Image 1 (cartoon, rainbow, N blue to C red):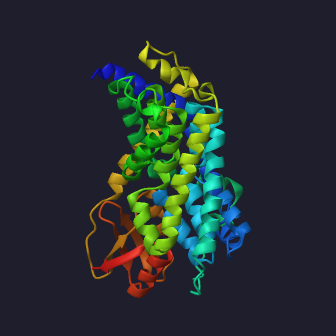
Image 2: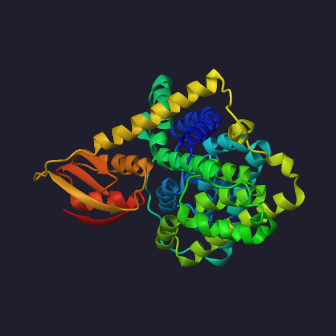
Length: 414
């Protein structure tokens, strides 16, 4: 492998995406701080069609990956959101987000950036409506779990802005970062290693190719933003826009981890409807793109496509944004390693094993909820070990209840 070619390809992709990704992260912080979660859940109760549409519209701009959206959706469900609305939220949210829409525009152009949220909305509304029709609401009383961010609710505007920037540029980067880096590296490797003619034959059988992409996308486990450079690189190598679109939509929404948790929280029937909605919508839109829309509408970013030819001149602004993004990725990586320090176990300290945590968003959610339990002096979550270390004289049953109310599964305490 030509290492210089790989580095040039990787840098070109990063420079195309970084300004839009940073903008999306900032908008994500604003949504997190200034939009209360209790406001969302108030509009999602019941099994009406309007609640399904509202859930999809709420979910589309939120920049949560599939692992981050699961505890959020479970919490909304426990606050009274209907099962159909929860399913709609689960479908729409991981497929899009302000960061991924902006990054899609930067690498794949305006048509893809428009079609992506439209397809997410269509699949979410269809899936939510089908759940309401075929999987009726149970009579189980929803738990009233108030997840509004009380720390910033009544703070001055300047404090809220700082909190929004911290969440967007630190917490969100930590959450999305691993999947984004994985997607960038895979994209650069595809650009360097995959022969240009490999996908020409596959594109002759679009439906078969789309089904193959779905089969690959499920275990792939990439976020909405991380799937973009992979789809772009495959298009550069000859894959049709419609097939690439299936990867963009199915990859972030359907993966083994999500389906396992969905089956436990929503039930088997709702999970089957969820998967069918994601796959059918992605393939339907992919076929529409390849059949009715000119391929010239879906050309990848010129600087990335041209990276094979020679070298690409990149302006100072995308270069500065790329440096800042890389600095944030490095900072959040080393901070996460630093925070996983060893705790001295005392009579005041207990470790709670938790299932379902997969990213920085999960970590922050659990720490915030456990910190509210009376008697808790400090909390630290280790994602690698899936353990929450709680110091204080809090009642263990109250801690366990807080874990479950946050949307995660309690396993054991020691």
